[in-house]
Length: 552
Image (cartoon, rainbow, N blue to C red):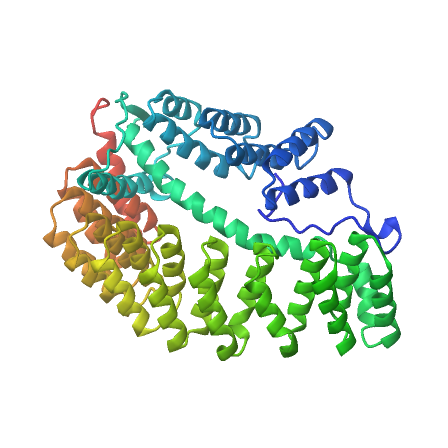
């Protein structure tokens, strides 16, 4: 199975040298052309292109990629969820070894859940029937049960919150429980609610992935018209040669071919001299090709000249340039003079709703990290109403490791009305993985009345992998009785990866008969199996499970 990244580096097909220098396999060229359409969100053209691609190159290494993007385009362009589901299901069946199977399977889970909620539970049945789950004894440590158990608890709280708010949450017809059996070792029951709730979580993750893909797309656009290594080697040798730069500028001004101009603009980037910057500015202001203008912006940005920054600032506020170009400038502004960058970043956050621009502006403010920058992020988060915008800003705030941010996140975790936003704040605290973070998470767990937030706090405590975390989690085991909290606590102990967690997990397994708690304990022991005591505990579990009646 080939290895590839989600965003491919395309070098384009325009020529400055002989065809031998820039030659590629035709299927690779055609695939990259289609992926360019994906980035431009021209969904009908994407479908037509990749259907033709699969017909023309049935044995290409890119065939599974083409099939996946065809389904993705259908999802974006069509409102028929059945059509979307069927496409992804066919993809999984046709390309079981593809690196895109995980993405397609996530899509299937989300679509199946939505269709079931609209009165078509058979799509969940189809999803389960066609799935090739491999539930071996250690699966609940890494693969499945922990995610389901945690998600079940969180999603159930969210469903109840919606009902309490007067929102009519569609009911899903009951289906018989489905059992996956691992020999004589144990039996795991998974019902429709499990599948639905996990799908809700995957839906949110896919939404964030799409935002990240759009943000990263500028990297491909930046490179798709750049020259190849041989030509860049020639340019590098002539970088200080005035005549060489004059030749390129002359060619740029005299050619009518936009692909040639786009290539020439990128080649000019590394030459010194005011005349190069002037030529790039002329292209930005006057060229008829948007692609050539985009490349000139990238080249001017990489030259990092203070004289050009006023123009670049104007471009960030201009709808004449595409999102990925404006986002590239915003991303670079973290290294500019604060007095110049911060007002523009603040204006972007106030004026824009595009998630890529919002995320990039917030990211640069977070990287600047000054008091003024942080206050803008705090104020913007509080003033925005759109949930996605608030989440994106909060995620960037969480990346700043200052006491003010810890305080802000803790306040959001405890007092915010939105559980999902509160969980993002909690996860931001947990990312620090130090004792300060553990203390804040303990404070949230103790003082929160939301089970979803308490579960997130427990998970974060475990991720810190500190002895302080083990001690706090031991307190929770001694004070709580709810199975869902005990199971989450045991999972968190497993996440600490510390030997001191093993006896606590094993005692919980021995003394609690709740199946959810026991499964969590088994999974925790599996993650702790670098310690001899955990291995001994797993042997005890094996004996215990083998002694259970088959129908239990």
